[in-house]
Image 1 (tube, rainbow, N blue to C red):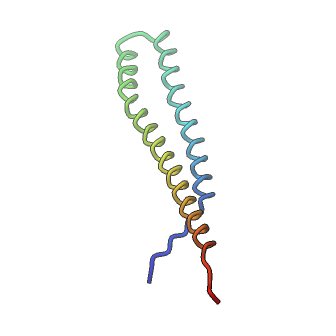
Image 2: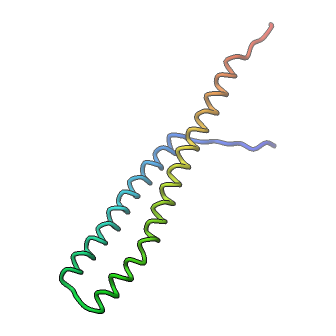
Image 3: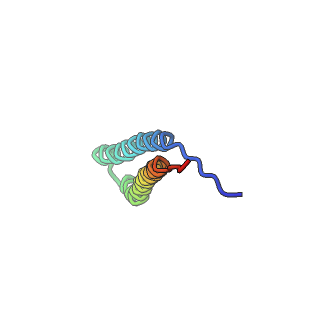
Length: 102
């Protein structure tokens, strides 16, 4: 028996939009975290403040990497939707060309 592939491209689009919303919220949260760190650095001085701020700065690469991975996944979903839509259009076009001699 052959493999069946069933894809709802509208669902792909819906999920992609939801992930984009989550990404914007994530970006806002981690940018706000660094703004708060700056505010703290203006009032909280000392070795402990420096340690906290330094530790937080070490996480920036991880935050940026996760953001890049989310962007990559959004790009993948866009590409997948386009590919499935194109395949559907091609199949529909080819089906319309079927003729019979009877």
